[in-house]
Structure formats: C-alpha cells, structure tokens
Amino acid sequence: MMLMMIAAVIGGIVLSQYSLLPVILTQYSDSLTTYMLYLLLLLIGYDIGRDKNTLSKLFSSDKKLFFIPLGTVIGTLIGGLLAAFVIGLSISDSLAISAGFGWYSLSAIIIADVRGGDLGSVAFLANVFREIISIIMIPILVKYLGPYASIPAGGATTMDTTLPLIEKYAGSSAAFVAFIHGFVLSLLVPFLVPLFL
Image (cartoon, rainbow, N blue to C red):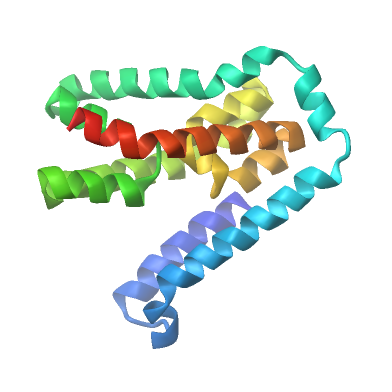
C-alpha cells in the first residue's frame, strides 16, 4: 500500500509535467480532492465505528495518550528551532514552517503571503516531506515502538492522508487517537504559523 501511494504521487507529478490528464480532472482537481478526502474520512470513521470495543478500549487505556498532540507540538517546534541553526533560516521563519505540522497547503499559503513565495515554497516542501517520511516510517514505528508512536510523525496529516496507514498498521484505537491528534493540530496551524512570522 505504501509503495502504491508513493507511486501515485510520482505518477501525478509525471502526468502534470506532460499535461496528460483530461482537462476536466485538472479543472476540478481541488473539488475532487476535497470530496475524495470526505469519502476517505467517512470510510475510516465507518471502519473505526464497526469495532464496537474501540471507544471503550480507548477510554479504558492510559490517559497519557491524550498528551500526544501536546508532545507533537513541543517536539516539532524544538526540531524547527534546531533546524534554524543548521539551514541558516531565521528562528521565526523556521518555527513558522515547522508549525505547519505537515499541512503543506495552508501553511505554505500563509507563509507566502507574509514572507514571499520563496519561503512559502520551502514551507510547502518541508511539510510535504514530513508527510512522505511519515508514510514511509509509520509501519516501522509501529513495529519497533508501538502503535501510538506512529502518530506524532504524521502531524496534522493523521486526520486524513496518514490515517489509513495508522489504522492499517496500528489498529482502530490508535486510528481514533490519530484522528483527534490531527484535528487538534489542524486547529493550531492557522494560529501558530502567523504567530511566528
């Protein structure tokens, strides 16, 4: 599945470079993507709800699991701070990019509006790479560190694009936590990114 996802992204890049997709797909790509995302979330919700014990297992488990979004925010911002010294960006720009938490479309637009297209492009690529690395690392993290260790890597994407992988490799309980995690981080992005700019 992971290889299919990576192949699909590469295939999309190649098709766009050579204008090989039908005009109707490119013209309505934003709407199609949104509706497909809604369908994906519906099916994931159905799958989580199908297991009658998911919610009871979640609430009977260790309450420390609800600190995962907080840990993700702290860890990501510390990583952004350290990256500033390595790549030569200002601390505020590096923190703003990291505060995208993988939500490349929104964070790149906010940053491009305030700091220009160059930094917006850096934000886009940094957050896309976070998502790609998460897709690759989720099965490995689950195998060696446990189901909940796979959640922080995905950042805000655990509510959508990386949610199926977490559900597949870490199970329904982790998928439920991942959805809440992604939801919380997605709410924070529009506030934290401008805060650092």
